[in-house]
Amino acid sequence: MSYVYMKVLESAPARYDRGMQILTLGRLERVKRDVTSRVTAGEAVLDLGCGTGALAARLARKGAQVTAVDTSPAMLEQAAGRLRQEGLASRVVLRELGVAELDAFEEESFGAVTSTLLFSELSDDEIDYALAECRRLLRPGGRLLVADEVLPGSAWGRLLTFLLRLPFVVLAFVLTQTTTHRVRDLEGRIARAGFHVLEVSSYLGGTLQLVVAE
Ligand SMILES: C[S@@+](CC[C@H](N)C(=O)[O-])C[C@H]1O[C@@H](n2cnc3c(N)ncnc32)[C@H](O)[C@@H]1O
Image 1 (spheres, protein in one colour):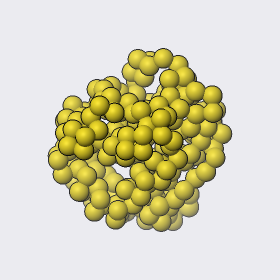
Image 2 (image 1 turned 90 degrees about the horizontal axis):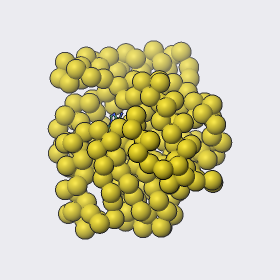
Image 3 (image 1 turned 120 degrees about the vertical axis):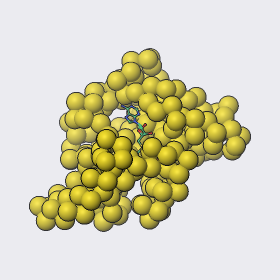
């Protein structure tokens, strides 16, 4: 299974949700459900790289005050349509903003920061910057919830997933001129950024991880 194909889906936001549902055998929805279950009603939540707004909508339904950011106007348009349709538009603030622009927010503005399948699209420097900004933006006791595709720990696991991903990498690059990479040592990176890791959940044979930290 490869998430590289998601780059192709991102170029067609209207088909993104259905495509990701199939591609992840429904596990991405489960991840979003698990993220939402760790957020409380009334909490101010920042969703980074919100895409079509599926997680933002779930969080808003739970009663969170959601700010959702993304760099893609097409994705944000899709998110706005979804939120309107579900009657949640007044409960989510959507902003066209990248992780490099998080200084737009005051420090300690949020009780939780969430991010699903964004870090695999960022460079190492961007990930480190985003994590440092998350620390600044979180209130004391606030939680970081990051889910992404990760690089398996064993050499055999890495070789196998490399071979499985290769055709998708080529296809995605030909169609979108972009690609993604599995995040190496997601848990360790989050810990090194100064967070205390509370739990790590694995999905899809350990290729997808949710890290909860504070
Ligand atoms: C694979 S999609 C994931 C969308 C959504 N979080 C989900 O789980 O379905 C990655 C999203 O990150 C956005 N993105 C990529 N680089 C970004 C950046 N530097 N800052 C914010 N969003 C970014 C893309 O536009 C895309 O919507």
